[in-house]
Length: 129
Image 1 (cartoon, one colour):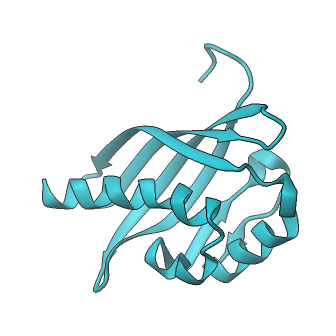
Image 2 (tube, rainbow, N blue to C red):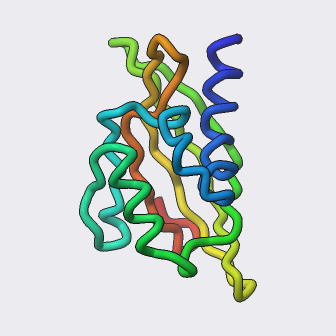
């Protein structure tokens, strides 16, 4: 239960750090070798949290003003890989919103749980997997 709660807290931390621009704290969220898959947005994978920071800063005012995460489901594969699936809601400055699905692989390191892989999937059509 302690690990499960820590993983939930980790997933929730993403929105707080991104929305407040606390990019110096990305090491609290991601492994140093994180892969951040943005192929659903027709963008390349980002490697390392420095690349995530650079991409976020380059996006500038097009970033959501609020990243909200919900429906966090944690599972463990037979080989011990811990996966997290969650929903994300992005609220933009103009009042529009978007929905994504986060597919994460998390890893426990000396400093705690970190996201090692994140795939961001867009949700644009209802009732489709």
